[in-house]
Length: 476
Image 1 (cartoon, helix red, strand yellow):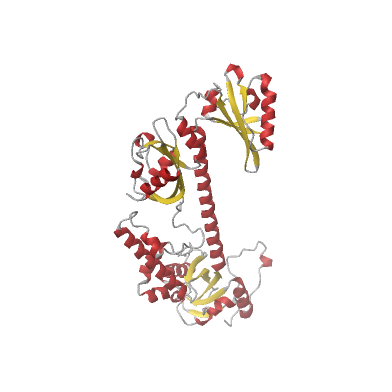
Image 2: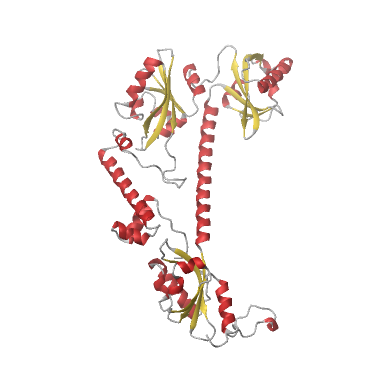
């Protein structure tokens, strides 16, 4: 590099007088080295003639020791076709563009983004590279954040769906009231039926309009008392338009940092028009936050909510009525019998861990609590069911799960076949060995493949299957 480098014929300056004059070799080399994190001077065939590595970290990875080698030989196998295309573009008519490749290193592949162009009139090429490891780390964190937000959104939608189903299916008339404006924000179908109102007509109406005018002050005073006290006794008032007396109770709660009142209406004589479920099921529904199911003494299903239908993977309640609960719940011949015996002895059970078998073959880890509920034809059992299994299996939500112990594997007996248990154990051992090899080799996949005695292609396949890959999207 003894000759000065003339300016490129393709100028980017508007004023020709402002174009820099010829640069000396030292100035040109300093300028090119400052543009990127690493700069290679290449022959037309792609051989490295010289290198400038101003960044110490890349120098520690041996970038400065590649003089005399073929440029594409310093890259991973997957990146070499990209490097060949960049060399062809630099000597052809296609405008050069930035492309990303990976260089193997002791601590793992180093992603570098290169721009390859011809160097003046000489038979030389220059490859200017920028270290992309920082960008890759930011992209990985962004991806994890996006997935976390997506999981939170799914959980919120599921919670909203459960709330809406319970709210709409409840046999008891319920109003959600804004305590400041004293207006109805939500009203379930039972409330519209009780007040003989057109569906949706109660939304936005003054809440005191549901009672007779001469009792509205008492009603407003009762709502004010509910804002100050949690255990306020119900009040009996006459509904508007001579619809009879109703027992009204109110309770304050907060949603999204906003105070709201939940107002429950019950006819004073206990008769509820359009009652969808009997009084026993109404008591069970009132206490159950998640899935619920009501069975008779023979454990045949009497009624269930929509959340239970989802867990059982059944399309309609008609397919559940009269069917034994053991069809879906617990390990056959073990869990359900123990739960029922505890119910008969103590009257209730709490947070018993078992499984729910869906009709499509899925299995979910659940916790079940139950009570004995009196019925017209004898005692029946009400169960509340909470899904405690991971809803997005394999998602990167934090530190990986602790491996199963022998005790945890033996607990699968009755839930899975022996063949499935052995396959799960084999997959677990394979994953642990791969993670150990990656940790031993500082996440160098090529070295990990040698340690494990498998090919790199086989290791990539296993990494993808176990969700352990850490590749960053790029052009390679």
